[in-house]
Image 1 (cartoon, rainbow, N blue to C red):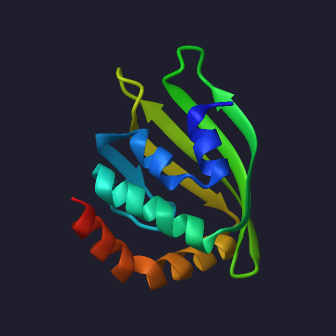
Image 2: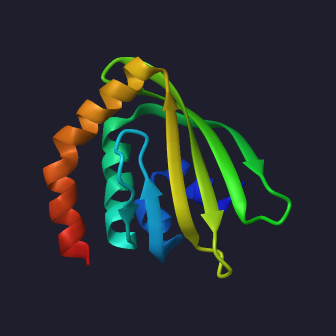
Image 3: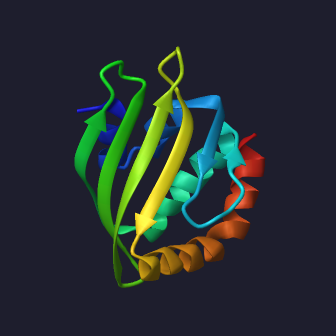
Length: 131
């Protein structure tokens, strides 16, 4: 099992953060502008772990060179079931430097946007404190 997947499935958000490159860019399924930086990305991922229920990875797809991975998942947000995928790119040091998330269906994406919006003040405060 990939170390990222193991850390997420174990709920070990410190281990997830340790896998992020300092210059990682997080692209959200519900926000237009990407979020740069390790502190912000780690904080967003912590918030996601608070709003997702019944989260589980169902498939892992890897490029033969090991630098690109896709982790397909299911979860529930505010009673809406969703399917999604984490697309990760790893730098030369094995750290995640690009993290893109996509989710479906639209109703679940809306529920996720609302749930994450409710977390945004806390996310901003925690990310600023972590820098």
